[in-house]
Amino acid sequence: MKNIGTFSDSPLSKVNEEASDSLLLEEIRRGSQKAFAKFVSRYEKSVYRICYRFFSDENDALDAAQEVFLKVYKYIDKFEGRSSFKTWIYRIASNTCITLAEKKKREKDGLLQNMMRWWSDVTHETPEEEVLERELRLMNQKIVAEKVSSLPEVYRMPVILKDMEGLPLDKISEILEVPIGTVKSRINRGRRLLQESLQAYVYGRI
Image 1 (tube, rainbow, N blue to C red):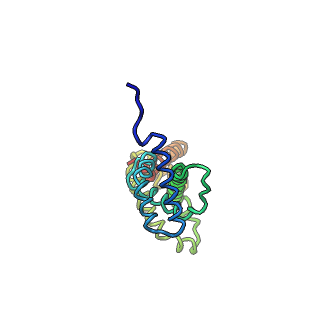
Image 2 (cartoon, rainbow, N blue to C red):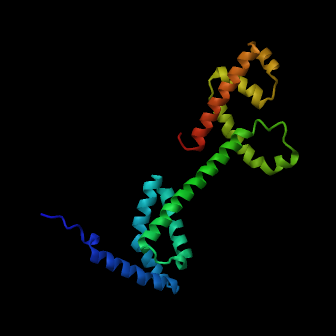
Image 3 (tube, rainbow, N blue to C red):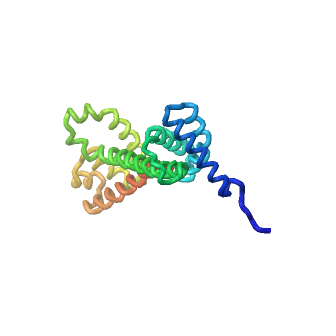
């Protein structure tokens, strides 16, 4: 038996859907809150599904879906009818997901940079900078300190002495009773491990 598809896929169904959307569109443009609520009810599941498949996270998907409908409401007058109303909504959903993902990545990158910066600048910070960034630095220092305490012992002390205590390499070499070359190697390796641990924390992999 030939598959004739579902009713929703039939040409008549699509015509009826587009006609209904067109009526809703006109009512929304006239300021009808009831029409907009009906529009949200009609498309919220589809929009949320797209957002969830993009983020694979319920909260992120909900935030994105809400942003989509806010944009639709804000830019409804810019819809020119070159595509179907549904296509226009899906395009907004797609662009919104990409934009929010890029924003979240920038925020995480910024947080990671702040965390990785605090000890290298600690001896060069001006009083004004310390006042402005004290709370953020305290939070970052606590997180970094926890990650430093988790480093393997062989790398932990060199990183603490160099990056947190600000001691020169020759002094660290004297304290640990190892050659300066070994000190440098352990500091570099410890820093790499620390950065990987902080990246995992910031990007939610632990």
